[in-house]
Length: 179
Image 1 (cartoon, rainbow, N blue to C red):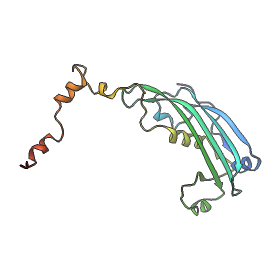
Image 2 (cartoon, helix red, strand yellow):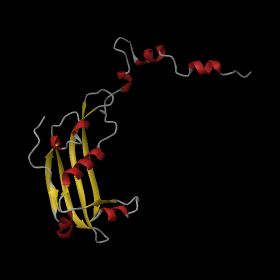
Image 3 (cartoon, rainbow, N blue to C red):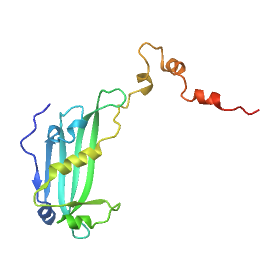
Image 4 (cartoon, rainbow, N blue to C red):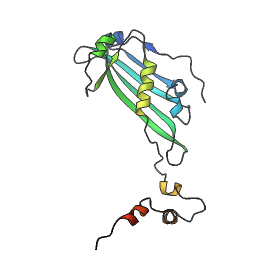
């Protein structure tokens, strides 16, 4: 496992970056993403990010974040590591106070409102986007789940299925027959 770098926490001024159209580009060791790490089979590798400050169509301070990585997850079928590409692109706009954030209605807009600051944690935002980009059920493309259900001593998946009683077989016997 790689040693976490000394660079985080990646604090940025979202208001100034939005004003000047600034950009922050870099890469972080996956081992530095402490909230993502428990979901990974390995902390080896890095996540690349690009944050661009801007003003949105309403003149609000805003930003766009792109996150890319290839991570090792555990395959749900065979429990072996599987390489999964992550790619996330999200747009945000920032408000200055929690009261202002609380007044924003929940909607399906593309841009998500966030509480901005002059010491905003870009690391936390990168972690959030990486977590949301993780698949719920990672799998190898070649895993055959029928093979995995077979007892190593059984001949094949069909014989295992024939030996196992159907879960509703007893209910079928209770059902009255119509003539």
